[in-house]
Image 1 (tube, chains in turn cyan, orange):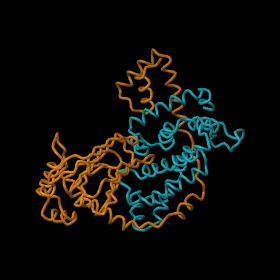
Image 2: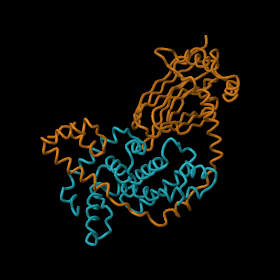
Image 3: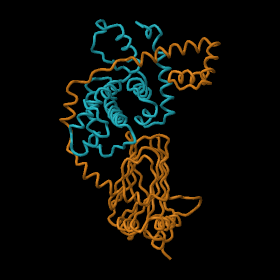
Image 4: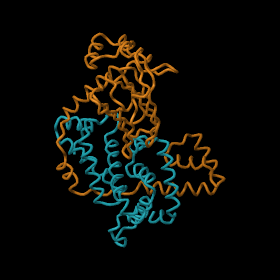
Length: 182
Length: 266
């Protein structure tokens, strides 16, 4: 993978070098896919969301404002696309009943993975607004100002939603569950 | 019952944003309150576990699927189109258009013209006049009266649209107020052939792009902003302008009356 800064790759891409965009895809596909997966809770849908977000970013690359970080800009497209997907699913699936990564057999898993699954399931059951803030804070490791940009809400709201999400998770998960294998 | 203040200090402790004074305050409180200590301990454990969640590998063919699906985009043509729009808007950006107190829009617009022409260099002025077609002179503006006023909200935005007109010119002032930086798209358009658009001024710190044609103006921004637009309306045949605002989640279309209380030239 290239070490060139994002802005240089974007510049190359705007000058017709599609391989530069390939570098950006390589660089960000994992965190974007993970964010999408945690929002939509389905691997195939997460792949579609990530793919569409990259294509939207490519189409709008000449409107990208360098004042913002590229990955925050493209995270925002993931959020928008994920919300679209969830809306389309809303009539068919009760999101609160969604099973997180449910195809795997729990008995075959390592203990720490079981703890992770419990936490992920609890996160997946959070209201969407709280879930997204949690995903970007903990799983994407974005600071408050970047989350504010990605979600289009004030930093104050980001903090208040994160605090509420933690409180809910803390009530949902017992200390024993959290401390399992710790 | 733990007070809201202590709950906030506990969460800020997790974020590592407590000042020394606040930390001392929290520690002092924890010494005497078991419930708070337990809450902090559990939240710290949760915080740690959330940070430790491992990432999932994306599908192996994700990159290939993306690269195969990329459309053909002619960035250079679009860039040129946007730069023309930006240039015209930039020319009218300094000095800022100030609506002070009960200052009428007509007087303000006339002043704007005078200040702009006094502050622009000769070459800028020539470029501005060339770019704008016919620049708005105080004589051309004439008497201006308010004809419509609309106020509504869309997502985090409070939107005020104030429309005024003289005999031949329609002014639209659009104010978007928001504390968020949610992206929003603004389109002002008309189906009438006799309207001609002029961009007068804007102030949108997070402007993403702007473009316009003879009969429309479009801008996307992320956060608050205001625009003052003007349309030549020599035949006074047009009844309404269409103003559309779109966020990622919602869209609102408003018809703005530009004929009400039509002003006759004395």
